[in-house]
Amino acid sequence: MDMVVRADRAPEAGETLLGQGFALSPGGKGANQAVAAARLGAEVTMIGRVGKDAFGSGLLEIMKQEQVNTAYISQSASQATGVASIVVDGAGENRIIVVPGANVEMTPADIEALEAVIGEARIVVMQLETDLAMCEAAAGIASRCGIPVILNPAPAQPLRDELLKHVTYLTPNETEAGILAGISVESLEDAEQAAGIMLQKGVQHVIVTLGSEGALIVNTTGSRHVPGFPVQAVDTVAAGDSFNGALAWQLTCGTPLEEAVRFANAVGALAVGKTGAISSLPRLQEVEQFLQNAADAKST
Ligand code: ADP
Image 1: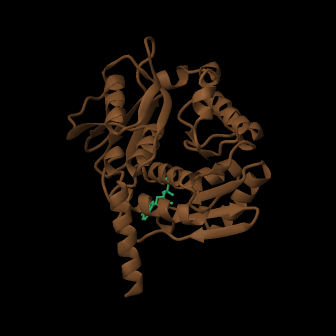
Image 2: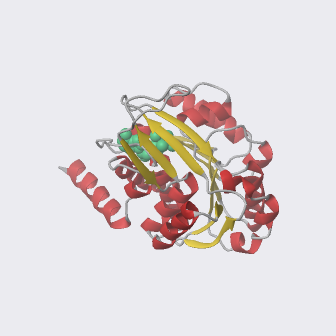
């Protein structure tokens, strides 16, 4: 749960300020990605953990409303629901503290116990707001069952080759690609170089998201830049999450990779055109209309 406070400036140590606004905004990368895919039509089961508190119950309710299967989201009796405390100052600058709480209470054994559930999936999507050991456990199961894995390596942190070799699609943004590869990524060429390093570690396809520029697909057959859609960006929160949810859904539909990435670019563009995280995620009809308008604009 994101708790967003707006104030002219952040307080100094020991200081109390009056703020201008407060909002609770349901989020978390996993939840955003799950809802992004569900809104497009995917049948989504989410594995995770929240606290036995008001935020936890509220988040579960939202996921249910969004048609996400919550049967495997457990509620911790001892840890609070994961939160982000966000102060936005007058210049729009964020100061964020994330407290993962119940998210990091899960163990690889909890994941192993869900092998049969994971084994039924057509794709497994993971991000790094949970403990790495759980991602490794889930990736191992997916690999044994022959299920493709999308790993969105956000927030970026060093990953073991043992995990990367089970990753079918790695989807860093430019900053994350740079951190993972240990180089600075400022151009398409840099992104391609960083992706090459990830491929050597056993990833099958690297898809570097490039903000308004779209995405770059790099695999053993070469690299392809899939341009983004020009839109008026209002709020880039959940751009990457919407992209990942959309990509997952398209791949389970059997869409070829380049076309799936183009579709995910459209979903990302629509998400940056609206404020908020879950509130900005588009439904299928909206995406189809957007793609149709883009095609019409091109042909005139
Ligand atoms: P993250 O949100 O993880 O930093 P990006 O900024 O790369 O990731 O955005 C993810 C995707 O969202 C991009 O690949 C693109 O498809 C879309 N997107 C992001 N920003 C814009 C923008 N300003 N205009 C159009 N599309 C965008």
